[in-house]
Length: 205
Image (cartoon, rainbow, N blue to C red; front, side, top):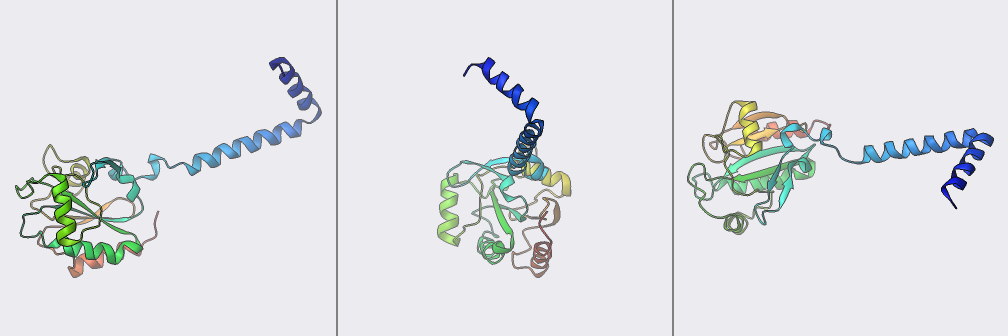
């Protein structure tokens, strides 16, 4: 069938049954709208999470947008620190509340000269020593001009950059930082856990 024949056929159909053309156009418009709404957009991801960082284990890029709608506890970690034993408490917290929407995110950093190892060695240490399964990212700076983009924004929005390892930022389901603690606050601290439970009780956006 030639283009001329197709156009002639369309014109005859439009003349005899204009309602059919209107119905077809309506169906097409609604199909497009449905496809658009089913496609995730950056608008659904909080600005704080619109970053891609490398995963610790294999250095593959990971979008932080995958954690949209979750309560997040972001922690800068180190393998040779007096607070390193907090890995176990962080994993326990993650396991206890992940079913309700909590995710602990670990960010190894040598900013305080206590994380000298390469990414794979850090990953092996965390898993073999403390059974860490919560998501962790490749070693990066967490303060100053070289801070990774997430931590640069967290410092700007809270006015509290990490002053030592195992500093903790708590974000609500809308990606807003609501509380921060130094490494002196353990993962099972009553106030910290109470804040986590309070945010988990809030409906997802």
